Image (cartoon, rainbow, N blue to C red; front, side):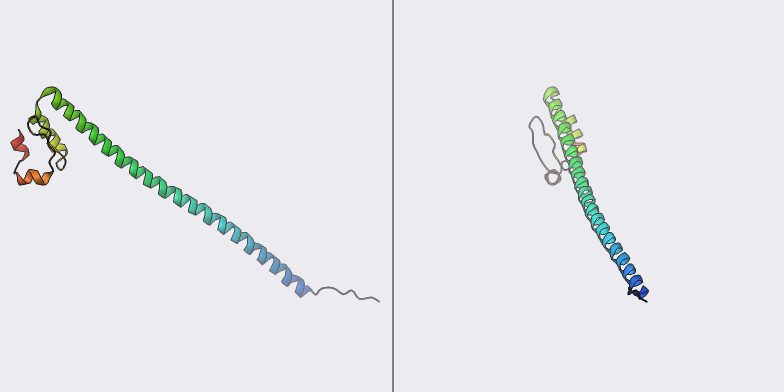
Length: 123
């Protein structure tokens, strides 16, 4: 009689479990690395988007204010009514500029306070 020499059942089960465990480990590692890369790319994109939107909003506000200032200055040049428009400019931009008589004078709020010029005196 011939006996079959085979691998014991215990070794087969241990090998099968080890192969399944190794395969799962490789799959989850690959999946995790891919997910990490995608998440980093999304984070960088989102950060860049927020930064660029913030810069866009600041530039829009800056240019909108400058356009309003230029429109007011053009009104002064056209009408010659500098006091009323100077008051309007001062009220809109307290820390910015105002126009005195027919001369274009840029003064900040501290200089106005030193000279004790208030909005009521501009009327």
